[in-house]
Length: 89
Image (cartoon, rainbow, N blue to C red; front, side, top):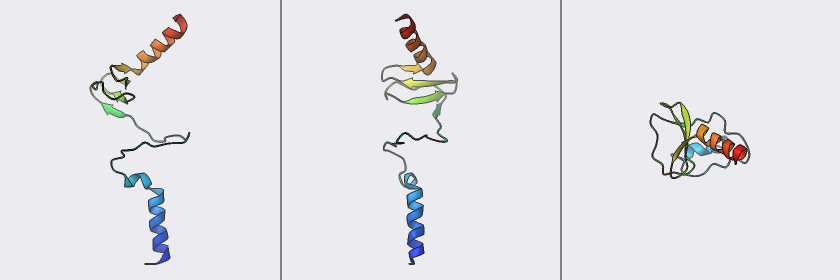
């Protein structure tokens, strides 16, 4: 094996580190950077509430939905509740 082979192998691993973890089971720390080409999970029906913070796109309702651990909330409804509390509090 030549040095160039080792360098090439290291470069491939370094540039594609997340591809080595399948499925990705840990947290990804973006350190304040953007997540580019990110896509929400698409579901055709509302999921059961169980995972706090899970955000997905419900295709039938054409809305983002958020799991708060007890209730699945449509993101717009959540924004309205915050607005109502702040304005009419």
